[in-house]
Length: 166
Image (cartoon, rainbow, N blue to C red; front, side):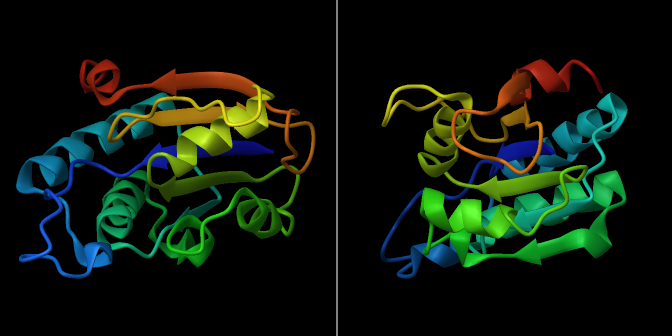
Protein backbone atom coordinates (compact mmCIF):
# COMPACT_ATOMS: atom_id res chain seq x y z
CA UNK A 1 0.00 0.00 0.00
CA UNK A 2 1.05 3.55 -0.62
CA UNK A 3 -0.10 6.11 1.93
CA UNK A 4 -0.06 9.84 1.25
CA UNK A 5 -0.29 12.20 4.23
CA UNK A 6 -1.39 15.76 3.43
CA UNK A 7 -1.67 18.53 6.00
CA UNK A 8 -4.39 21.09 5.38
CA UNK A 9 -3.47 24.37 3.68
CA UNK A 10 -3.24 27.77 5.39
CA UNK A 11 -6.33 28.41 7.49
CA UNK A 12 -7.76 31.42 9.24
CA UNK A 13 -6.19 32.13 12.63
CA UNK A 14 -7.91 30.60 15.64
CA UNK A 15 -10.22 33.21 17.13
CA UNK A 16 -12.96 32.09 19.51
CA UNK A 17 -14.95 35.25 18.78
CA UNK A 18 -15.00 34.63 15.01
CA UNK A 19 -14.86 30.81 15.09
CA UNK A 20 -16.33 29.62 18.40
CA UNK A 21 -16.21 26.12 16.92
CA UNK A 22 -12.62 25.64 15.72
CA UNK A 23 -13.76 22.74 13.53
CA UNK A 24 -15.48 25.32 11.30
CA UNK A 25 -12.36 27.45 10.75
CA UNK A 26 -11.85 27.67 6.94
CA UNK A 27 -8.87 28.15 4.66
CA UNK A 28 -7.75 31.68 3.91
CA UNK A 29 -8.04 33.00 0.34
CA UNK A 30 -4.26 32.62 0.07
CA UNK A 31 -4.50 29.06 1.39
CA UNK A 32 -7.10 28.21 -1.27
CA UNK A 33 -5.06 29.71 -4.13
CA UNK A 34 -1.85 28.11 -2.93
CA UNK A 35 -3.46 24.67 -2.49
CA UNK A 36 -4.83 24.83 -6.04
CA UNK A 37 -1.27 25.34 -7.29
CA UNK A 38 0.15 22.65 -5.02
CA UNK A 39 -2.56 20.20 -6.13
CA UNK A 40 -1.63 20.89 -9.78
CA UNK A 41 1.93 19.94 -8.85
CA UNK A 42 0.63 16.69 -7.32
CA UNK A 43 -1.08 15.98 -10.63
CA UNK A 44 2.13 16.73 -12.57
CA UNK A 45 3.98 14.32 -10.26
CA UNK A 46 1.51 11.53 -11.07
CA UNK A 47 -0.18 11.45 -7.67
CA UNK A 48 -3.43 9.50 -8.18
CA UNK A 49 -5.01 8.21 -4.97
CA UNK A 50 -7.63 5.49 -5.13
CA UNK A 51 -9.22 7.01 -2.05
CA UNK A 52 -8.96 10.35 -0.25
CA UNK A 53 -9.96 10.31 3.41
CA UNK A 54 -10.20 13.65 5.17
CA UNK A 55 -10.81 15.05 8.58
CA UNK A 56 -14.32 16.52 8.71
CA UNK A 57 -12.94 19.86 9.94
CA UNK A 58 -13.64 22.56 7.35
CA UNK A 59 -10.00 23.48 6.65
CA UNK A 60 -9.02 19.85 5.97
CA UNK A 61 -12.19 19.17 4.00
CA UNK A 62 -11.55 22.23 1.79
CA UNK A 63 -7.95 21.12 1.21
CA UNK A 64 -9.12 17.62 0.29
CA UNK A 65 -11.80 18.95 -2.07
CA UNK A 66 -9.38 21.26 -3.88
CA UNK A 67 -6.89 18.42 -4.20
CA UNK A 68 -9.52 15.91 -5.34
CA UNK A 69 -10.70 18.24 -8.12
CA UNK A 70 -7.15 18.84 -9.37
CA UNK A 71 -6.44 15.09 -9.38
CA UNK A 72 -9.79 14.09 -10.89
CA UNK A 73 -10.62 12.09 -7.75
CA UNK A 74 -13.80 13.78 -6.51
CA UNK A 75 -15.73 10.50 -6.38
CA UNK A 76 -13.29 8.85 -3.96
CA UNK A 77 -13.42 11.55 -1.25
CA UNK A 78 -14.73 10.47 2.17
CA UNK A 79 -14.73 12.03 5.65
CA UNK A 80 -13.61 10.30 8.83
CA UNK A 81 -13.54 11.38 12.45
CA UNK A 82 -10.43 9.21 12.79
CA UNK A 83 -8.59 12.18 11.25
CA UNK A 84 -10.46 14.88 13.14
CA UNK A 85 -11.86 15.05 16.63
CA UNK A 86 -11.63 11.28 17.07
CA UNK A 87 -7.98 11.10 16.00
CA UNK A 88 -5.80 8.41 17.47
CA UNK A 89 -3.17 6.23 15.80
CA UNK A 90 -5.34 3.22 16.61
CA UNK A 91 -8.37 4.79 14.90
CA UNK A 92 -6.33 5.49 11.77
CA UNK A 93 -4.87 1.96 11.74
CA UNK A 94 -8.39 0.56 12.06
CA UNK A 95 -9.56 2.79 9.22
CA UNK A 96 -6.72 1.60 6.97
CA UNK A 97 -7.16 -2.07 7.89
CA UNK A 98 -10.05 -2.31 5.42
CA UNK A 99 -7.87 -1.10 2.53
CA UNK A 100 -6.45 -3.22 -0.23
CA UNK A 101 -2.66 -3.75 -0.08
CA UNK A 102 -2.40 -2.37 -3.63
CA UNK A 103 -4.39 0.78 -2.87
CA UNK A 104 -3.06 4.35 -2.82
CA UNK A 105 -4.76 6.22 0.03
CA UNK A 106 -4.44 9.93 0.81
CA UNK A 107 -5.15 11.09 4.37
CA UNK A 108 -5.84 14.80 4.81
CA UNK A 109 -5.50 16.02 8.36
CA UNK A 110 -3.81 18.18 10.93
CA UNK A 111 -0.64 18.78 12.89
CA UNK A 112 0.61 17.33 15.13
CA UNK A 113 -1.47 14.23 14.30
CA UNK A 114 -0.01 13.58 10.83
CA UNK A 115 3.55 14.11 12.05
CA UNK A 116 3.09 11.62 14.88
CA UNK A 117 1.45 9.17 12.48
CA UNK A 118 4.37 9.49 10.04
CA UNK A 119 6.82 8.89 12.89
CA UNK A 120 4.87 5.81 13.95
CA UNK A 121 4.83 4.36 10.42
CA UNK A 122 8.49 5.10 9.80
CA UNK A 123 9.56 3.44 13.04
CA UNK A 124 10.94 6.42 14.91
CA UNK A 125 11.06 6.39 18.69
CA UNK A 126 7.76 6.63 20.54
CA UNK A 127 6.39 10.16 20.35
CA UNK A 128 8.85 11.32 17.69
CA UNK A 129 7.18 13.26 14.91
CA UNK A 130 7.81 14.57 11.43
CA UNK A 131 7.23 18.33 11.19
CA UNK A 132 4.50 19.01 8.64
CA UNK A 133 4.12 22.49 7.22
CA UNK A 134 0.69 23.48 5.95
CA UNK A 135 0.13 21.86 2.56
CA UNK A 136 3.04 19.40 2.93
CA UNK A 137 2.73 15.93 1.38
CA UNK A 138 4.51 12.81 2.61
CA UNK A 139 4.41 9.40 0.92
CA UNK A 140 5.03 6.15 2.78
CA UNK A 141 4.90 2.71 1.16
CA UNK A 142 4.14 -0.56 2.92
CA UNK A 143 4.52 -4.20 1.87
CA UNK A 144 0.86 -4.71 2.79
CA UNK A 145 -1.59 -2.92 5.10
CA UNK A 146 0.10 -0.10 7.11
CA UNK A 147 1.59 -1.18 10.40
CA UNK A 148 3.82 0.73 12.82
CA UNK A 149 7.48 0.67 11.85
CA UNK A 150 6.90 -1.03 8.48
CA UNK A 151 6.77 2.07 6.29
CA UNK A 152 9.36 3.24 3.78
CA UNK A 153 9.58 6.95 3.07
CA UNK A 154 9.06 7.58 -0.65
CA UNK A 155 9.04 11.40 -0.60
CA UNK A 156 8.25 14.41 1.55
CA UNK A 157 7.52 17.74 -0.11
CA UNK A 158 6.81 21.12 1.41
CA UNK A 159 4.51 23.44 -0.56
CA UNK A 160 7.45 25.66 -1.54
CA UNK A 161 9.17 22.63 -3.10
CA UNK A 162 6.05 21.87 -5.14
CA UNK A 163 5.27 25.38 -6.33
CA UNK A 164 8.34 25.34 -8.58
CA UNK A 165 6.83 22.33 -10.43
CA UNK A 166 3.78 24.26 -11.72
